[in-house]
Image 1 (tube, rainbow, N blue to C red):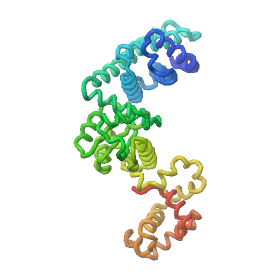
Image 2 (cartoon, rainbow, N blue to C red):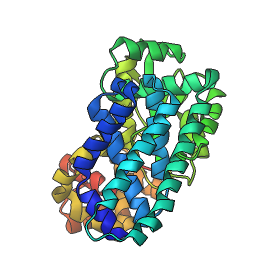
Image 3 (spheres, helix red, strand yellow):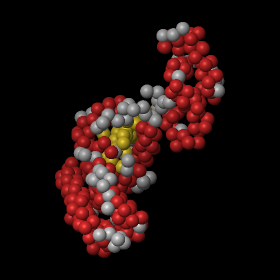
Image 4 (cartoon, one colour):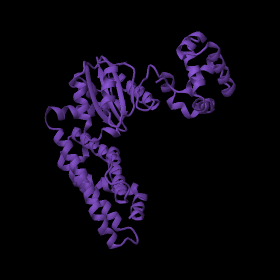
Length: 369
């Protein structure tokens, strides 16, 4: 089975193109979806299905997230749920045909693949139906509006009329300030997102949560960022980390704040809330980490090996570069703190009493908790 699935996946480009063409030919409403976007969804579906057939974990949480998200996008485009369900069967049929034409595959293997293939499609269809059912009424319209807003903001189309109108319909003031809070998307795919939305609705301000790509994003306005972050962290399955962006003006500023929050999340300590304004140095340089690693990589290992030295450097920076204040914060003698700073300089080559040495030292130690 694995070899057959691997052979089909090796030709996934051509299979994606042909399956997409078949869906669009048999279900004309899919002409509403841009071809490139449609091909991306079909490719994801084929890959997930092949991995499941190869015995790599069955129907995964990531599969569920992708399918829910695609179903919301299709609903927002105006494609009825029956067409979405039919599209899964078209793609499944094409995958089956591709497997049947793998050289050397036996009839017995094809029979063995039939049940898991159609079970996967049934599970995907059930998720689409559930998502569509949740899309009925005011609550469902809110879900679609959130997805549309996140789509346009993340695509850089925040200045377009649809983004502004969707923000207004969700209760935001488009010209006001926005702040983003984000986590990894994976923990929320099994339906907990609606519970989070209910919790956010009880907080002051306007707060809306949705999934986009690998992120779960909350857009906030007139809200306490601490309260929103605490609510997200409280409900976060698995107690992962949370990133919080800066407050930014306008709908276009929402995307900038999402970028802040994503960077803060990437440097967050495990199971913590990371605010961009506190971790700005590490967050701001997160995309340059590979380029900068030669400057502080060895010092990072020394910080892990000698946490007492790292604590002394952080305290010295946090307490206004005062040995006495750092010593008081650490409950040590000032001479001990001075010795540790000197020892850090000796081991790393970074002098924490100089700006450049302190900056590289702080990068190696990591963001504040």
